[in-house]
Image 1 (tube, rainbow, N blue to C red):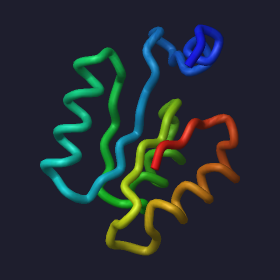
Image 2 (cartoon, one colour; image 1 turned 45 degrees about the vertical axis):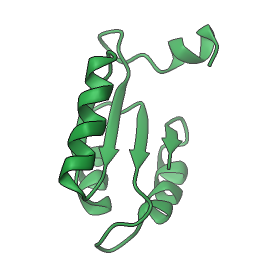
Image 3 (cartoon, rainbow, N blue to C red; image 1 turned 90 degrees about the vertical axis):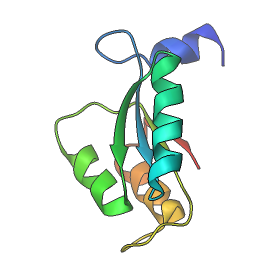
Image 4 (cartoon, rainbow, N blue to C red; image 1 turned 120 degrees about the vertical axis):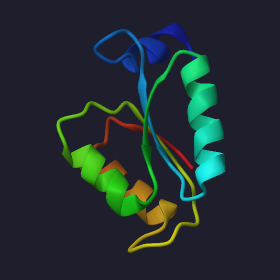
Amino acid sequence: MNAAEAESLLGDNGRPTVLVVEDEVLVRLLIADELRFTGFRVVEAISADEALSVLRSSRHIDVLLTDVRMPGSMDGIELAKVVAETWPEMKIVL
């Protein structure tokens, strides 16, 4: 990632916000802790449904980091498709 790309990810306080979507608690906590340690703001969700609820709220999210296999109404791939269509500026990591 070059400097211009990094600047485009910056949230309100100069740090990008990552939405971590993972149904396995320990995996989600490990990922979230590591991201926070490296300077990201982190919001956590346990399912695609919860992630969409977060995204529809007034929170600014810069990056979606999602598991592929999750229980619920959709998996991570379907979530990524919805996010790409609804919030095309958001970066997505599967």
